Image (cartoon, rainbow, N blue to C red; front, side):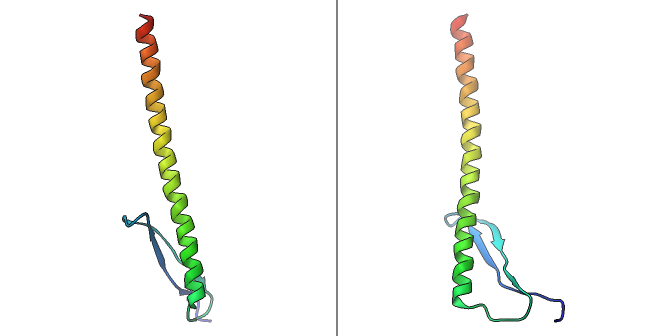
Length: 81
């Protein structure tokens, strides 16, 4: 073995947006990636993309909830005055 790994790259993006990452499966020896290998990599890319997008949406929702909570608390203080 020459110390180099055979690699295949699958890029992933959310709903046609910009690339948000890449999955790079490696093989310890030169090889042809089968259609099944490529399909499995595609499924893994879809799962990873869903996870990244959902985490991003969750963070945005948490931030919005925090902002709305601050507004609500401010209104309560104003009503008390």
